[in-house]
Length: 168
Image 1 (cartoon, helix red, strand yellow):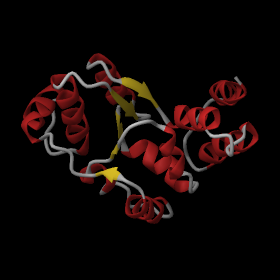
Image 2 (cartoon, rainbow, N blue to C red; image 1 turned 90 degrees about the horizontal axis):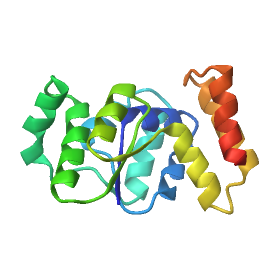
Image 3 (cartoon, rainbow, N blue to C red; image 1 turned 135 degrees about the vertical axis):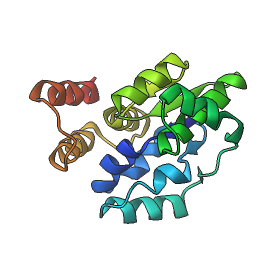
């Protein structure tokens, strides 16, 4: 299963130096170059560049034939969002299961409507905690708190829910 990753998650995990947690997903990671280009704030930009250089991440998926349809669906053109949705449309056309990793509500709703499995930053942390015996829940809780501190604004209730799921 390919996992398409949006800029919101790349920024959140990149700010705290935890992009490696994305490796908890099975299958190929896909970060279209238009999405990667959005990450310009440090240290997320440097951490993303390093991650893309060191890990097997697809940055140029074969989705050109679906871009126009994605732009029509989103009602916008020339954005990184359309490259992500084009990937989801291509997967659906090829009857391939795909995951979509984003904290953007609108994109999550579109991805869900296209049949993708949807998760966000906290889902990545929870999955890594469950899949990697070297990433204990105490460390996962620290990552959740650090991402919150670096700008991923959460209510206290949401933060406790995320921490609770790590314990889960």
